[in-house]
Length: 65
Image 1 (cartoon, rainbow, N blue to C red):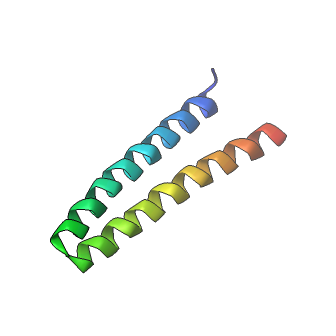
Image 2: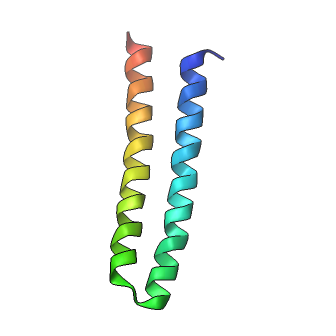
């Protein structure tokens, strides 16, 4: 395994953990009825998903080069 693949795996795993954590935050915010926390959690999900997508795109571009 080369360094780029290791970075990709670490980034994707980190993004997955971020999505899970943000999902838990969403559930808590919904239970409490806290709209501000809900918006924050949804933004966290978006950041985690985008980070994973950027890592995958970068890996694909590296393979093409």
